[in-house]
Length: 251
Image 1 (cartoon, helix red, strand yellow):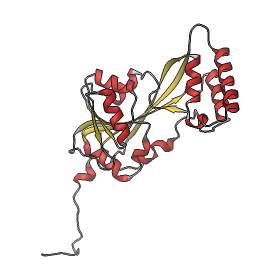
Image 2 (cartoon, rainbow, N blue to C red; image 1 turned 45 degrees about the horizontal axis):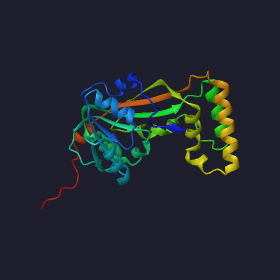
Image 3 (spheres, rainbow, N blue to C red; image 1 turned 90 degrees about the horizontal axis):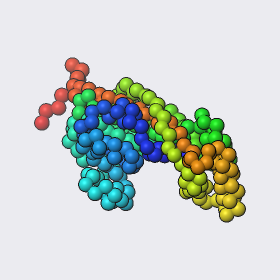
Image 4 (cartoon, rainbow, N blue to C red; image 1 turned 90 degrees about the vertical axis):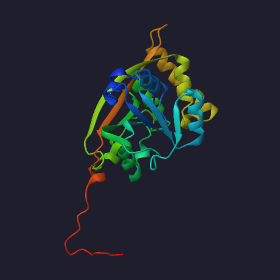
């Protein structure tokens, strides 16, 4: 169980990922409203490239003046050097085709960088660990930390040879009803039978009741895993040197 938003986004994480408040930022795929609000509030020029038509329309309707372009990461319709930062939140599968990685590097200016974000609920807190154990009995993939494979596509990538990583933590208040809704809306758990769903929600409710200090809500901890990699344009500018005995073609 992960989230691209993690509720409120820590300022320190955003300042590390996008150091320049005025940056030209290309967001690829879905991103949380918290991150968009922070970026725009700092003065960034933000554009979103979304490959799914319905999501692109919904994003434009929600944000109004935000520039949203229907585009695949493997064929970005922008001039070279158009952006200071390319930001991807959670949807790292966008980097899997090689053309997507070279496209991200191409549209970045010299010195620009790729920024990746993944938010995972932090189970180092005892009550969160108990919640994870309950949920993983139904789906082992829920509430797991991001595997390193999530950014493995950048390992050895000539366009982004130096990847830096930092983790941040943020705390998000959550009510009892909010926690039950969060659990019941998870796709895997939404398909449970009525009996299994009722049993699960009773377990979740019991964890909340034994952990919260009423009337204060619980605070749900998120581990914000962030990666940053400067673009290397040498592959775009290197010269091709043919051997002296190479084939010469004359037209």
